[in-house]
Every structure is written in C-alpha cells, then in structure tokens.
Length: 456
Image 1 (cartoon, rainbow, N blue to C red):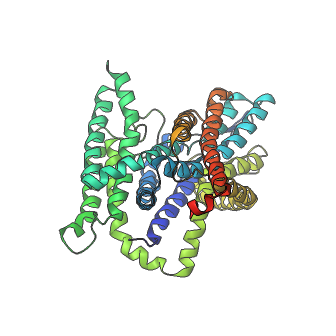
Image 2: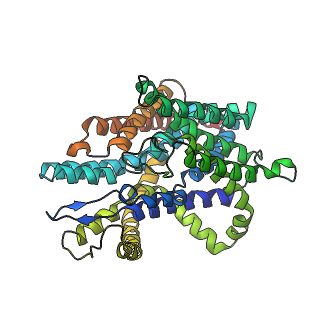
Image 3: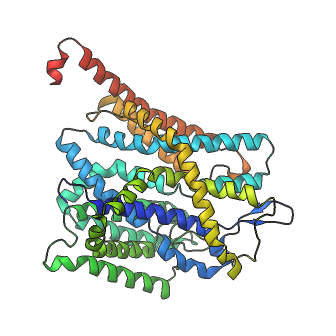
C-alpha cells in the first residue's frame, strides 16, 4: 500500500482481538460444586461438538498476517534510515514487554498474597492458568519480531518462495511429530514440534511481507486469483486432514487430544491458516470500502489502541463475575452445556463486557504511564555494541519466561513460579536498560559542546 496506512491491516488486528476475547469468554464455563468451590469444566472436552466453534474463533492467523505486513514496512523504513537490527527490534520489544511485565507482576503479586493466605492450591492453579491462557502468542510473536530483519532479507531475495519453503518444513516436522510421538523418537519429535511454533506461524507472518509487496494477488493478471486459490486449497486440505487424516477439528487445545492442532501447530493448522489468509485477501476490497466510513474507522482505531490491554486483561472480568455470583449462589446453574446454559451465554457476555469496560477505564492512567516510560527507555535506532548484546540476551530470557507461563500458568501446582517471575523481570529489565543507556548517551551527545552541529 506504499507509504500510506492500510486501514484494513488495523481492522484485521482489531477483529482478531475481538474474536479472541469473545471466544475465550464463550468457552469458559464456571460451576459451583457441592463443596462450595468454583470449577471450570473444559467445554471443548465436555461437550465435544463445540470443537467446531473453534473454526470461527481461531483467528490468530490474521494477527500474524497483519503483524508481518506492518513489520515489513516498519523495518524497511527503519533500515533505509540507518537503523540497526538491534535498535529496531529493541523498540518493538519494549512496546510488547512493558505492558506484559506489568500485567504479569500484578497477577504474580496476587498469586503470592493468595498463596500466603492459604488459598486452596487447586483453585489457585486454575486461576493462574486462566490468567495466562493467552500467553502462548507472546513468546512466538516476540521471536518473530526479533527475526524480522533476517526474514525480511530472505523475502527480498526469494519472495513468496520463502513461506512456501517454510510450509514444506512445517509439513515435514508435523509428520515427524505425528509418526514419532509415541515411539522411541518421542523426545526428538517433541523438540522438533516446538520448532513448528515458529515455522507455522512464521509462514503466515512471512505472507504478510508478500501481501505488502503485492505478491499475493494484486492486479489483474493470473496472480490475482491467488487469494482464492489459497482459500479453497487450504480449506480442502484442512477438510481432508481432519476427515481422512489423524487430526481433530478443534483449533484450540483440548486436554488429552492427540495429536493436537495447536500444541504444536499441526499441518491441519497450517492448512487452515493459509485458507484464512486467502479469505482475508478475497474480502479485503469490500472491507476497505466499509472502513472509509468515519464511524467504522473510529471504532477500529479505538480497538487498536486498546488491543494489548484487551488481550492481556480480558480474563479478569471472568474472575470478578465468578467471585461475585458463583459462591453466593445468585447465578443460575443449568446443566453444563444444556440449552438453558447456552441461553445464559448472552447475559454472560454482556456482563463480562460491562466489567471489562470498567477495567479498561481503570487501567487508562497505567497505559499512559507505560507509554511515557516506554518512550524514555526505547532503544535508539542505531543501537550497537554491548548494549545490543544485552538487548538480545534480555529478549532470550523473556522468551523463556513467557514460554513457561504459557505452558504452566502463573501458579502451576498452586505454587508461586519464582524462577519464571525472576526471568521475566530480569529479561524485561535488560531490554529496558539497553534502551535507557542508549537514550542517555544520545542526550549526552546532544548536550556536549559542539555536538549540536554534529547532530544536525
């Protein structure tokens, strides 16, 4: 789209966030047990037909597509302006890690207080898992952001062949995971499976590069049909892999389901992601016309501004409502998954939406404070040397900590996760310190005698 802002990219991010929030709320069901404790039966496992709903709610491919589109333009402009890889990656890492670290710190503080007060370990573990259920995305996206300069260089050299090649690797890894999952090579399959988090989601991220450069269907030539081919081909491949192959229909993790489409991302997930990208590109012209209406665009921009807060905090209203209604018996308790239960989903969503609105309003001063802090510790574009190495190390430690939280929650086994908490604090601190040192040196250079002419 040249140098102008593509409103459709912002729409995709906003739409993805909305469906993530609504999807998590829909599949979260709370029950009051006979002993008075609150339980959260897994809807996708308890009511198996609901796994089909994940075809609509698993919308994260669109977020990676939009992220790749935006990152390629941002890195291209920064690189042309003389920025280093470390400088650009550091700026993006600060914007991601600061709100995540604050959110995690507040949740961990609550976990520590509750553990010290003797809260039931099982309840604490359930709550800790609920508050971290969205974290799988963060280490993957942070790593892809860190790899963007290298991935973009590959894109400039080989274009659409890069995501195609990555897709082939993803298919091969997926086959090893399925065939070797229970055999003597189960350990190797598990290690390789972790690679598919980067490969499968990296395919979609890389397709964002291709989309921005017009390699996915722009114009009137034969390539204009490529989005439709992706939509149909990916959809058919997914149907065959689910109908004839070993993969389940659920695109969200279901306990005990093997193989899974998400842990690690499977070949079926890859097919669905390609189909979703194709559909997104097919409908793009019509949605862009809709986004010309100012009232629609203001709504999209508002969601985009609050997207990180929405993503991080959207499960807090579930805990608030559960604490207010379930222990007191004020909330009706129809049979789990029954028609009555589904009928109550509408007021459930409305109440959660109201509580989330209050949460967002309460967090607005914190958001403004984080924006000011982020601007002060943001690394300089030309970050190099020891500060750059400190930055890369901080990102690595942060990825490890976020991966732990994604897999175990904030209170695994009802215990405080001391090592992961320290890891996230140290990793985020190293990233911020690299930026703070760079910003201080920049100020000193401007304030030094004779430096004004050099800066100009």
